[in-house]
Length: 294
Length: 161
Image (cartoon, rainbow over all chains, first blue to last red):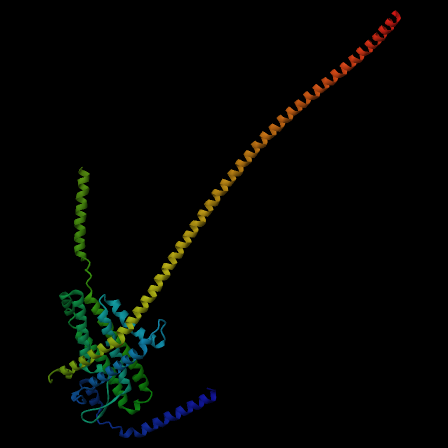
């Protein structure tokens, strides 16, 4: 492409952007703001106004988003399984490298934290993929119709408190299963010691994703904020916290899993060791006295 | 489910759980396990290749050791052979020297004997010649005396007659 052609393309792009912006400004007066920002944000937290219908059930939009995200992931996995995995080569291509890196990341995370890691690796892979894709899903603003006939954009599945609780509690159960696998009944006790874990895991996820959702809602609510700002807020922040949250939950799960499944005997306590040392010293003194007497 | 803060709904939690369980199963079967198996297969492949290379290296090292050993043994052999040859040469030289000495002595003794013999022969022939010469001389003398005597006798006889 010559310099002149590039300049021409840039000009066309600028004109199109300007047209869109003008259109948005002109249409700004009747943007269909049927809810106030307070209502929108309250609904994002409590999910008590906008419900969607899922197979006849009235559910939060987050659940529908979760189902769609799962569908996307399953279809992607199916495509990979049918078209790409059979063609894997010993020297990987670009796509194979990406898949192997992602699987290897979670597999190594599990191996690095626990000796019993077969199930843990698979779980954190699924959880990480779900959190990451689910959070990114928010970016696309997939539209759904509420039971009241309003149009809403589907949020991240885990910005729904129910989704976050499910993920937190399931992670806790997985950690407990690791405890049982590694230490038997003692492992349950070890896991129960971390009783605050399901709550902290759930609400950490919920808080992080909800804050993202709230900021996005806030930004998109006002048309004046809908230029340039969403590039940062919508793309960068979402991408960043998708990565961070996926990493945090998987890392915490594997850390606690490793901790409760660890069955190596603890070294004797310092006090006991000191006591042992004293006994040894006493025995040595007695022996040396005996030798001297002899 | 009223009364639970933040509108937590157990049914929806279970639905989320159901959804995630299906996702987990599908991702495990379709993506995680095959990719991990392939990675394990490749690790095994390269480990095998590595072990084969290590074996080959070990074999090469053992071959090199054997070669070194052989070279060392050849050196030893060459040294031993050289020493043997040197000894043989030395023995041969000694033998030859001894032989030469013996030959020389023999030659000398033979020469001496020959010289002695020749001397004796010469002396004998000289003696013989001298004897002959003496005999001849004597004969000559004798003949000369007898001829004159005979003549004298003849003359005497003739005179008597």
